[in-house]
Amino acid sequence: MSSRAEMVNVLRGLGVDIPADTKMSETRLSEKLDKALDCTQLASQRLPSLSLSPQSLPSWDGKNVGEDFTPDDATENNVIMGLLQSPEEMEPVGNDDFMDLRVVLLSLSYQYDTGRIATVIQNKQGTSAMCIKIVKVLKLNDKTPVIVILYDHALSNNRKPDNLEFCERELSFLLQPFVAGSIGAQQLLLRLLRLNAPRLPESYKPFRQPYERDFHLSFLMPTGPLTLADIGSLNKDKGCDVCGEKAFKNCASCGIALYCGKPCQEQAWPSHKRQCKALSSGVWTTVKFQPLLDAMPFMAGMHSVNLNRYTRTDEVKSGSGGRTKETRNPPPNDHGTKPFIIKIQTTQASIRVYDRRRTLDLYLMSKNDPVNFRRLHEAAGTGFKGMKCYRWAKRVSDWELSICLDIKLPEDPKW
Image (cartoon, rainbow, N blue to C red):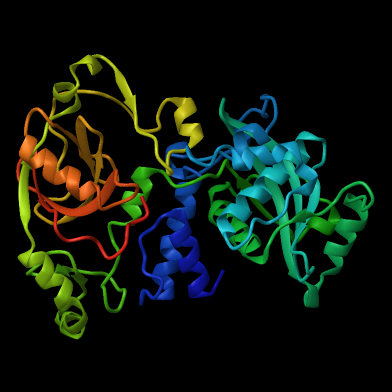
């Protein structure tokens, strides 16, 4: 995947806040996409040393690999896993390359579950194809199968004799259909495999047929949506608002715009000054909030699970997806004195505000501060279904935020 537009589209589709017209260099975009793909397979959690030793792992002894290989997020309503009902009709889902990749992974795992270890992934036009051979499926833990594969990629104008022999010897064209995979999905799969290949030890040399001598060796792990924590991490460094390179300073007036230096800041001023002056002159209201236990004492001793579109079902099953034991300790200050975006969510009796990573998650009850409760309630009424909105905020103290209630964001962030 070499096109900067393609990389930007994938990152935006994953929930990374990056402008469609970003000036970020292709090198930095590629690095950010690699990091995002690593996060989609939970690499740092599953492989603390970022290496995998197949010789030390047992074979997968679970039921179906497909049941654990393509986790949904909490709002997909099992769209991906629902495809198991008609696996032979799996098709790319449109212009979402990452979703197409997950459909391809589901198809591969389904084929393994039905006894097929070799296949070809290709687009409808037949211009790009990948030969895939599943070497073995290993058990990293009870919920994590690891598929070790040999693979090769070729374009229609450069078909290799070994690929043709692979198809002739490994596939039965009447009984074993190809896997439908768009060019974008194939490019993402290749990038994921190239990320994982160096994590295998050089000493690991599985058996190859003669026509597989030039195939590449790598592995795949269950791959799903980014988590809240990963999105927060990927969004920390958005780059200079002008050139996209690493940013070192914020706008002194509003504290929001990011620049690599004075030349870019001066260049951006004509377009930035309107938002800057609005935020600088906006009405910032200081509100004192409460922890959940004070707002709702009946939650004492309980755990809460924060679910939204970026909560993975495998996190929920393992008990790690946003699951926290409620305390009265003040939330950590990850933002310092810099402005950050909060979501304001309201009901008739309570208001909840939180940042994207849920490191800050606070409550306001109508009975405790009716004036500010009404102000936040009115702000939320301007947003989605009159129930939630997004605003800029600054941390004032452990339990206080200063919120710019009268200035809307240009567009709602991916949350």
